Image (cartoon, rainbow, N blue to C red):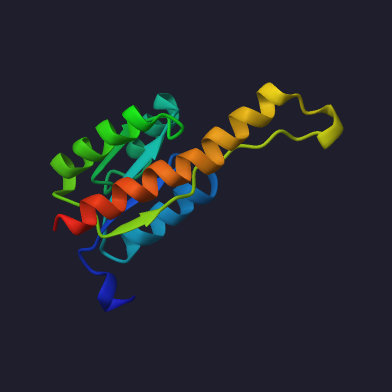
Amino acid sequence: MYDDLKDKRVLVTGGASGIGLATARRFVSESCQVVILDNNQEALNKAQAEQPEFAGGVCTDVSSQDEVEAAFKEIDQIMGGIDILISNAGISVRKPLIEVDYTQWSEIMRVNLDGMFFCTRAAIEHMELQ
């Protein structure tokens, strides 16, 4: 256990499944407060039911600046701020690049890049307010 993580307030995007969920669980095991953020409400409900130690879960599309800003307000209400952001949300299209159309490519870029930008900027703003 890392004593310097105790009571840290952690947000994990894409936290309702896969690597994000495993990461969120690890931070809980390190005595952190953890909120998971995901765009899948059903997966959020399942993750929270399986891990009641999570401080909360917020359904958010990270590719939407408005949704990210609203999510951070909710996270402030849940944990009173944020110390650590794990910007894990991401999507992919599993086929050769030549078969990926521009609509799919744009969606990947919105989630993987814009989402990272929106969440990181919001996290920095909220960290600076503390």
